[in-house]
Amino acid sequence: MRLKESEAFTYSHSEHFRIDPKSGDLHSDLVYHAYPNGGLYIFVSPILHLTISAGNNGQRNLGGHAHNDKLSFDLLLCGENVVVDPGTYLYTPLPDQRNRFRATAAHNTLVVSEMEQNRWLPGFRGLFGLFAESKCELFEVLREDGVVVGLSFELRYRDVCQKRVFRIYSHSIGVEDYSNVPFESHFNRGVLFSPGYGKCLRNSIEES
Image 1 (cartoon, rainbow, N blue to C red):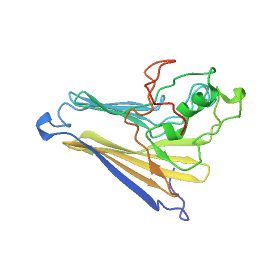
Image 2 (cartoon, rainbow, N blue to C red; image 1 turned 45 degrees about the vertical axis):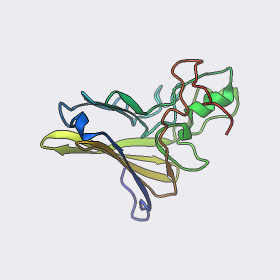
Image 3 (cartoon, rainbow, N blue to C red; image 1 turned 90 degrees about the horizontal axis):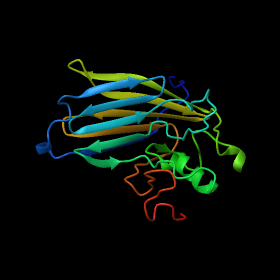
Image 4 (cartoon, helix red, strand yellow; image 1 turned 180 degrees about the vertical axis):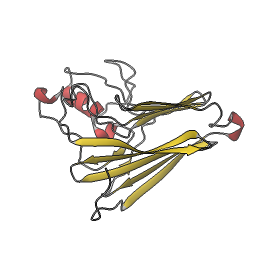
């Protein structure tokens, strides 16, 4: 999924999630697991757990239980939650909250104002389905001394083209974002978080 000559990644942002060098080296005993059919890519070491979501909507692209979480990730460093997935919260009792928790803006990804990676039908009919509008692909595997230390992904939906690169350094995780349209790199540090169905942290579902 390469950009056309008329397209360009005009906008960019980078973020680093750092650890104290005394905590260890993120490369030590680093293991990489790829599950391309499910769209999950995982890095694990004694002080790191990084899970990246980069798949399709599932259920033959009907997306009944899918969220708009393409290029999103969870990050645990030195036993501490650094960036977290918002969870599901509820299904039908509160439709607005169901949609809020599965929206692009709730996830740790590149957010384009007023746009969803995959749209859904209005009302109750749309609560368990997404239009298959996004395509997310692993673009490049980054290696150092034969060890996988990074991944590059590309995402396209409608007129939006985006790229996210994860790089694991000795004492930090780098996240580089690129887009052909203005965007915000959103990182949920627990403000919006449901640890289980019907459960929600206090102040996480207040109206914005």
